[in-house]
Length: 111
Image (cartoon, rainbow, N blue to C red; front, side, top):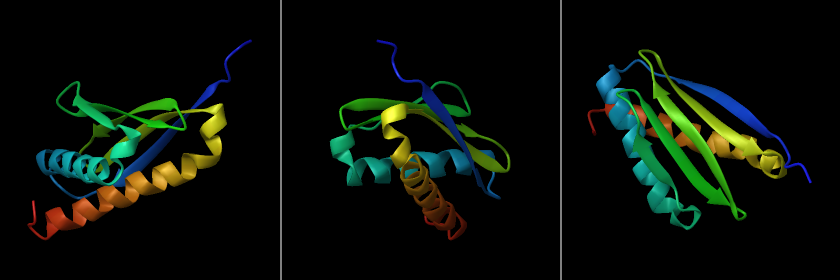
């Protein structure tokens, strides 16, 4: 049996922060996500100065993706298996809301 294809979901979250602060925002957003959704076993690891690989488990399936920090946006990519496509918009929404919350906190001097 051939495995169902994955779909690469790409999403950009705009910001007006310096790159170092945007990187901190991404880390804080992950930490918050990890605390709230520990049962999904999220992982986060910087693989370069501006890119972090992430993963989490949902319904027994591991989803992998990345954050790339750019001067005016944070790019989020996630490989979504066919069986989890109905949940892809919710996953992107959760990530975007978490990052946007920390962008606002950064602007308020809270990180």
